[in-house]
Image (tube, rainbow, N blue to C red; front, side, top):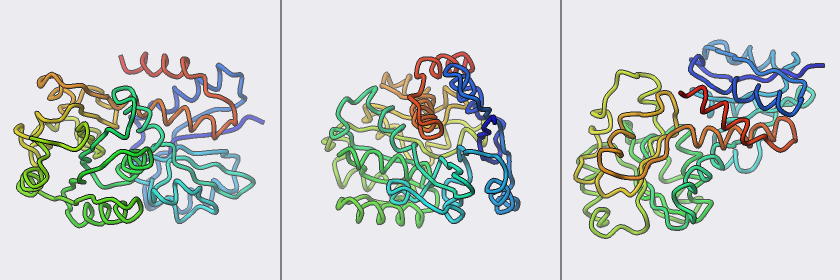
Length: 292
């Protein structure tokens, strides 16, 4: 019987997961199909109950459910549990197993610029489920996260405290431009940084509002400090060239577009779904074609 997988998100129309996974299924002759489950939060509980009893073999979980999905799972693997977010669910006879492939995807994307993540010193914008995975991926690979910046300072501080305790490090939670400027001065972030500075946007600024401009980043960071980063990274790919990537180009800096992390996490997700090695080049090619 054909197996069914799909992306669980709201909204879900922007996702390229269906074309990437379906191309991979076809390439390996896997008898499976991958669709879209655009589910409102008021319908989530009923949907998950349906998943248990219907022939849905697995889910890719995206905004806004990476954290909310945890309470519905029967088993959560150790990395996902530490991260506090799940982006992959497998249905095994009505029992739901949760995994996180975002953290590995983020680490692989960073390795395209930094061979050894132990040299990385990151400033992370955003404090949601994706931020959790990115931070975990960096810290688990020996890198450093200096601070987490978020419009709701309490969320940034909570996340900073949680991961500082988990990894025995010190991360600062920040909620405004003035706070970041004071922090940057206090730790010589611009004049003598510890490690190679990378700015990572994990927020959904551009995905939720494609009319938004760079002022959304400028609320927290001035050019005075941005020019000191070696690399800028996005984790969302729609649009691919965001105002942040344009700023990196303008400053002549290295950058990592959101398709990189998406591809690497999708490959690992495919392997969890099928227990087969992902056809990397097939997935890469179809992604590139659909981003043109």
